[in-house]
Image (cartoon, rainbow over all chains, first blue to last red; front, top):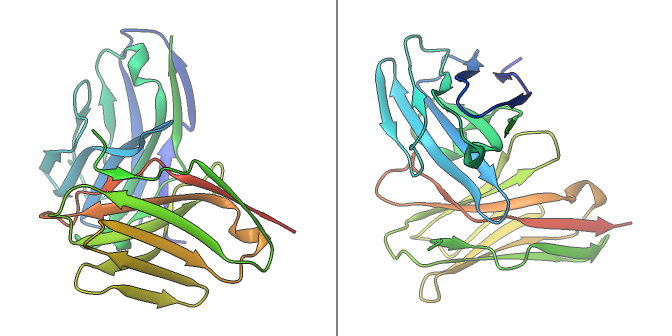
Length: 113
Length: 112
């Protein structure tokens, strides 16, 4: 079954404690993205990757890092989380750069205390 | 300043009637528009799209209309079904098709 998986699905942490949210896809897609969803703001792109070792900033990259060492994985790293990073995070992947071909993961709800 | 706006946070419609969800944008460089549907505890799924060279695109019960002069698009669902109850996001892209700007979403409730 074609899918994008994210782990963990729920996470409560404290300010400053480094964390990683993993994202994996089994469709051999080249393009992957991270988004955050906040009330009243919709989804905002954090980072995206066009292929292995190729990443670029989205609209809200501050406070986040990503890496793309393998095609299937695209982890999101918060080196020093802050309460304003409390949000619902989505990973997405697609075979091409056509946005309508994106598959989204189920989301990771993060609370930073 | 949000470039893509969905001014109605929620909409309630009777089953069988038409649902109309609206979206406005400010950036005239946007040339591709999409609608996504999202159920609770799931990621968004693509629903329908339209290029700026068209003013209408239809897929089954779903039709998207684009009015470029007004910088406005709308999604029509006819007839509405209870399973259509979800949050609908409109999104736009411009020079980079992979960079999407999303609206804040409209929660649709279709009453049986």
